[in-house]
Length: 222
Image 1: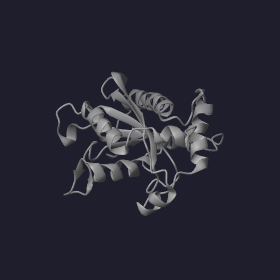
Image 2 (image 1 turned 30 degrees about the horizontal axis):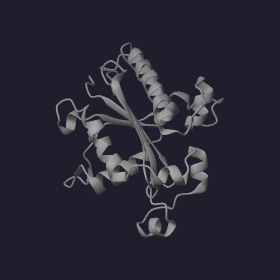
Image 3 (image 1 turned 180 degrees about the vertical axis):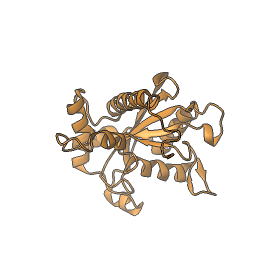
Image 4 (image 1 turned 45 degrees about the horizontal axis):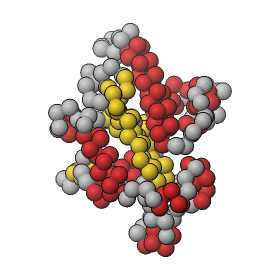
């Protein structure tokens, strides 16, 4: 039985390569893992100041900020120049996540969740964790979230729609349209995590409803 809370997070970024992109916004929603409800005041959101000089970004091993990405996220270089420094935002985010570690140990840490986070956002979490902490040197991994459990809602969507011929794409944008969500404000991290958290809660409630009716124990006995 899951007693760990879930943190659904999302980065907006300045390029498409998760391993080298610069984050420009980080937002998160805390979900009570037992009751599947948004935690009171369980919301985090901040812009992040990137390295705006292209040569300096490349020298740091990062992608320069791309105009195409800014157009998608509706951010300007001017407002990003006035945003809090990356380290400041990260420290605040770590404090936010740690509020939901109910005993303080690594196995009690919140479960990380997102939409395509396994293929993108998790790389940024690992990079910032290694850069600023908390980092587990023994296992060479982040030490902020649960060390084993991780939820990528895109994989849930694939599982439930992989045999549906009407589904041509499982992108978040397509899921918004298909499931009747608003597209207003899409690609703002706070909007995305709020809608992503709704999707996750809906799928987890569906899983719980079916799992209680399916006989798994001894299912392969003859």
